[in-house]
Length: 294
Image (tube, rainbow, N blue to C red; front, side, top):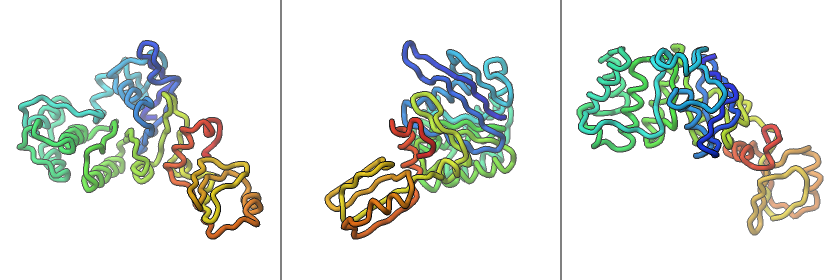
């Protein structure tokens, strides 16, 4: 197991950052950590990186306790924080050179190739860079020493779509070489497209953790009906209506649904799979608290 967190809890005074959090990430996973702002993603990542201590519980990277073997572990991690800051007055090339020296793995050719792939000018001063270009610098710093594990906190914020595609292309290349990726995001389409496994965090606790394929599969269906705007039946949630339409998620027997629709003035009917966004929002609803994937 590359990452293993058991019953991690972190208090900020009386406020709970994370509580009883359990997490496992296996070798060569591209693991997506999903949750809105304030759900505990960054707190979890900072504990995994040894940047803060948990109030209780344990966190292991490469099978070793992060608190006891921090220096050894971090030498094999590429990290991108959610907010990128650099020393003023430095050129991009100087920042990248400093990062190489810190990791004691200098590879000018590899760094130059990464700058080219991310369309980054190393002669520019860092304080003159846009948010997207500053994020590129942090990505290259995380990639250039070719670590075994990548831990990224909202890595694609500020990147344009073409650079995002190149970023995930490089990650998949690294995974094919044996690396593991753990990244947080609130962009569900990003997780669904690029990750093989995912964990959903709510109020500091992981409430679902499985392959993206299994998380995306559900018994529920999205039902859209034109011609009516009201229906009373069991097993429906997330009801949306307007003047002559109704849409809802249905988790029940399909013959029962069809029976309830008989005799109604229906002009059109579509039944589809729900999106990952809808599944995610279900986990964040009160109704979804004790149910399986919808």
